[in-house]
Length: 597
Image 1 (cartoon, rainbow, N blue to C red):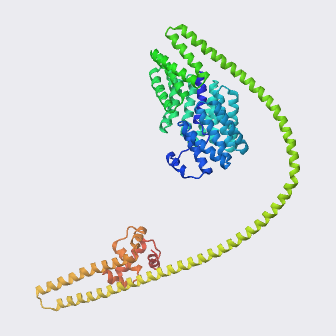
Image 2 (cartoon, rainbow, N blue to C red; image 1 turned 135 degrees about the vertical axis):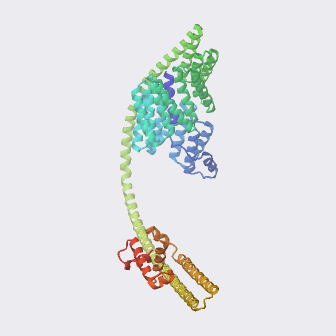
Image 3 (cartoon, one colour; image 1 turned 60 degrees about the vertical axis):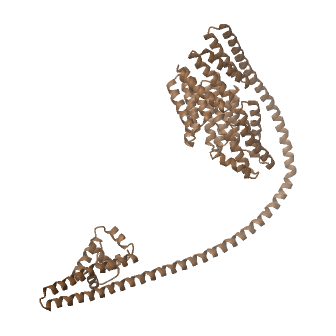
């Protein structure tokens, strides 16, 4: 149970965003590196690239970090140096080298303090607290996480605040403070959902599942863990998928679903192998060994336990070694080999006692060191304050004279700059007025041209209408004379029929061709008139539309009657209906209304 909870705390750093996550196309960004000059922009890109590769490709991440550190040092870019140290600590954490990781983190902390970078300090405390939690120093780990929360609140960094709450939840879970752990996890989940951070949401759902597992609510635990696994699978978070496999596999063993547990734990082992994570492989093997034991595959189970023991010794993790001994004792006892079971139990108990004693000794030693350090710090601070006071007295007068001179120079420079700025502003204002006047003149000229063009087109239209009217009158005169001739001629039936046919044909063509020609020309000049008219009143008849078009040209009743082959009274009647449909009060308002369409 202890190793399980410690591992949960260790997973926090894997999912913690010590630096904002790199979400751009990695390959495209890596191609830019050799083209970029050695400046702060390149340093920031190198740090983001190393953060992306940190958990999966240690060598590549370390190469980027070393380049970033070299360039930052040459540029005296202290923030870049601090972030490089922070990521070095994270990289060595993934390699299970906790002492070296701690050294780099301490270096980053000093630089962040000098820069007063509170976000950087919050990230440091989260990382440092995680490593202290792994080592079993829960008291100091909790203090670091609380400090991380306080700093992230001061800067308004909701992401770091959410990670800090998650870390506190895991710490309380390791102490079986389930209600308190669930409280912190829910606070962290609310922040993760606010930020829409899918990876972090998946981590929290998994951790909430662990709380329900601790309370014996296995179905609820499996529900939350599977939700977390589903999100991690969608976003292709391979390390997260592997860690989900570990916790779900352990839960399935408790639920006596041994084959399902074996399958998911074996997949987790393979994924940790691809990630080159010895700690993850070790935990997957020892839990897979449990599942194999219950499946009756004792030889394979013991082989996995031995491999787990080898890796635990390799990474020098006493807690993992102790629990592996416990599993091997349980297996050998299950197989009836009580001598070996007793031997492994003694080894397990010995390590547990050593860990407990070491933890007590370390806490006492740390308290003693802190007390002595505090006393020395007080003396040093007092001497430093005295020296600082004397030094300030010595340079105060000099600083005053320099400040006075600087203020005078700045005042002169400021006056000169304001004078130049006023002249530039005045000149710019004059240029803008000139441009505005030119634009107004050009706009008026364009409007005048358009107006003259429209008037010319209207005159052409009216002229065409009058020409059509004269042609119509001429043809009507011919028709009239032909009709008179037909009436006065001899009653030759063949001639009469021929004349009548000619008259009918002339009348038909006159009616059709006259209006068609007029409508074509009208549409060329006033293309949107008919559309706007029908939008205003969709139920107009064709006769009313024709009269509206003729009124647009300001023709009189007689001219409209000639063009439409209607009587003047018929034209007046149509105008009356048109006015009513358009909801106009008087006939005088009809023409102006149509003119503006």
